[in-house]
Amino acid sequence: MTRRALLLGSATATLAMPALALTGARRRPNIVVIYADDLGFGDLSAYGGTRLHTPNIDRMAAGGTRFVNAHSPSATCTPSRYALLTGDYAWRASGTQILPGDAPALIRPGRFTLPSMLQKAGYRTGLVGKWHLGLGDGQVDWNGEIGPGPLDVGFDYGFFMPATLDRVPTVLIENRRVVNLDPTDPITVDYKRKIGTEPTGTENPDQRQMGADPEHSGTITNRISRIGYMTGGKAARWKDEDLSDLLLEKAVSFMSASRTDPFFLYFAVNEPHVPRAPHPRFVGRSGMGPRGDAILQLDWTVGEMMAAMDRMGITDDTLVVFSSDNGPILFDGYDDGAVELAGDHRPSGPFSSGKYSILEGGTRVPMITCWPGQVRAGHVSSALVDHVDLVASLAVLTGQELPRDGALDSFDMLNPLLGKTDQGRTHVVEDTKLMVVSGAMVAGSGERVLALRQGDWKFIRASVDAAPFHGNPIGTAPGPQLYDLAGDPGETRNLAATMPYLAGRMAALLDRIERDGRSRPAAP
Image (cartoon, rainbow, N blue to C red; front, side, top):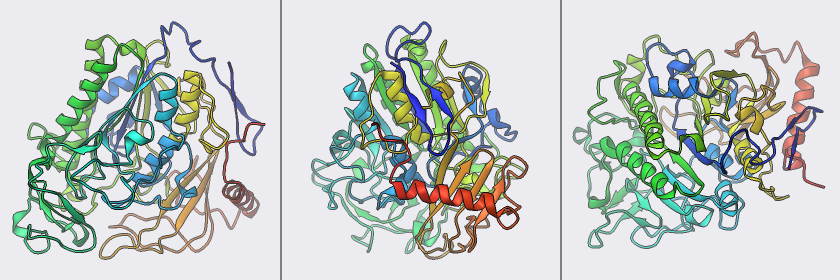
């Protein structure tokens, strides 16, 4: 069976490989997606970083294909995760902004998703780590069965954080229940007002291990103030320093229990998202403070995952995809010295800005694929690819058909992911949403800002001019912007006025993609 990924507005097509016709493949491969959190293009030594040495991720790159033109679907976390799991651009759906910890489930039961597709193909599916796509129907009962959630959209197993490290409730959920919850100490969560008598960062700053901005000065748990307020659940609260080890243990356990049959593991690790509180064995190792130490912890975690696969004898049967949900950020609410200790380290590499920004540093992320004997080893790929393409690509790999009304923006990029060709997408849409928050956070209207990448060209729609976030430009402007990334990767020279025809043509294509409600052509 073959499939052509027809790209909107282009005659270019990529011929997919027949499912399971891969050279030497013994069975349908296991699939592991390791999704870092706020990791930048320049944060890894495999991508030219010199201040941080990441030998385990470097070895993965040496044994597989390293992408230099890969993109997260958005410059923030929730939208990227939504797009990766559904195959739809998140900006098409309402509510796909950064979610609070008590938000209702964004992906509803019955929705076509990557894990539900792989379930149909006979895979055991698991989520370990960060969820941040909402739970329940708007009033989560943290003390009972929690749903809808991951188990209602295609996952057989889940061990996960409800939202982010910096948001309450700071508890873990296994399948449908909070882990280690004492029924005599029920959990209550509120994002609008303080509840209970527990200390907060605002009222009790002396009780926390690091300073924080007003948004991150809610309830203090594990000596760190968070966004929002909670009471109860003391026995269930995680310890930040031990969390990465616990998630690794659960990920390895899932693989071990599933290794006799094909499995899909979405391992959404927490590094280097704030608050950065790495295990003591990593503290001080980077010389760059908690953020650098957290990246070394991430590298160690990747090494342990690969070693576990070797011990189980499943390495040759496993496709691993490593990437990040958006670009990097140094200061993101906590005073942990990341800015002061960065020195000459450039977390976005040659690109401008990072997380929250429509500039290239917001979505240009590290991405590595490996699968011995199947993915081209030691290859550096210039193919334009996006995480939204995982759904269509893995559909081809596992012999599944996409529904007409599902994965509307996902294209078959299997050959580029395997390193068989550097011919990827002809275009991709990038997005960010301007946050309406107070203090030092990004100032804006709350509108969604879209950009179009086409070849080496990038077009950014006109929008309100958002204030920089601690010196990092958001990249918006009242007029259109056009950049030639081949000669100007930092997006410093706006060519929209001097090349109006090209700017207009790209604007029209972006309008069409938005208006059509899909970019993947519907099957006849």
